[in-house]
Length: 94
Image 1 (cartoon, rainbow, N blue to C red):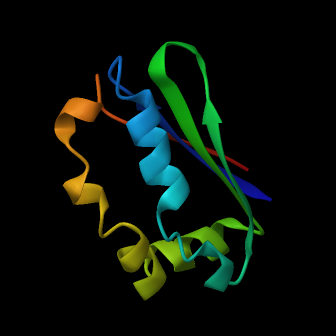
Image 2: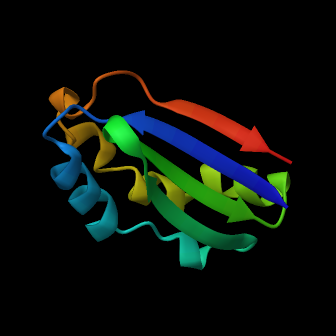
């Protein structure tokens, strides 16, 4: 199993908008071999964690290099920078 977590620090007052963007986006994850599950976790103080579980690191790496990944992240550049109070941080677990 391979877990990838991306932590976002969302600016105060932008939490609902950020969550709506994530919940309504097309992720295309279900199309990818080796994908197991996705969760968007909401913590205190504007912290959100995108949590994906994969069969293996090669399965995740295959998704990152895929057209599905490009389609899923196409809207990322249109999320206003003021939604964030800091950079995102990626953590991986084997």
